[in-house]
Length: 339
Figure 1: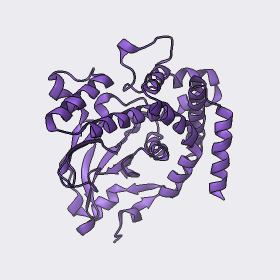
Figure 2 (figure 1 turned 120 degrees about the vertical axis):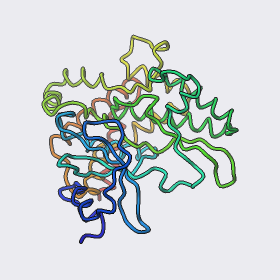
Figure 3 (figure 1 turned 180 degrees about the vertical axis):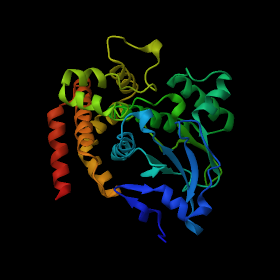
């Protein structure tokens, strides 16, 4: 019998069905969550002192109408790491014959005196009603209230809010269209010295990044027709952006959100420049393929390169950055690394 879950990898995907069948002690799904038709769930992998909880998200082809969505999450994580944003460890799997992703418990390597605090929990403590329409500024207020109540220092509070803003900026580069203020998690509790803390947790998922909500036919149409592509990628914006009452409707939604964040502080503007200079989709594709020991299908790779480059051009124009100089430097560094 194979001993390591990585030994169950076939064509890039770990066969969870075979793994769980051969390790029946882990075949327990006690924590089904709302989500896709085939429910997301927690299960265990590893065994003995290496046992870990993992979060599995099966994808139903009928629901998403493409096979690309699972690759998008891995590519998104690679892009985030390029600019120093922590993400969960995500891998490809097959479950019940469908592609899936699984990610390790983000508290696995965190001190025992901490716990996960969701944005919903923070917002509910402040508003006590429907939090679905909460804005990013409502979340800031809820974090401030939590910090005042629990005695978290201003240093932790400020860092947490800055990290949220960085994720929002990076999401715009990665064409994220599924992040709302309610989608963020936080690590709270006490540090080793007994001080109350709050910090943005590693990003666990971004299912709709890099235009992965489009069907294969729509992707091919976008590659073939630049006008269609520009129109559709403008629809890819994250709802954690600028509150409606502060919007300038002269801008497209993603651009309005980007300007809202970079005008907040010089630090945010510098981070946006860093994203432009460091986010490298070719490096992300290469790293994912090396990790899962399989190639991303060609049309997916071509598509994601195309839309990522289109968004990069838009952002450079919006921020008065020299797109061609940035790309020349980026690919020179990539080629040197490759050697």
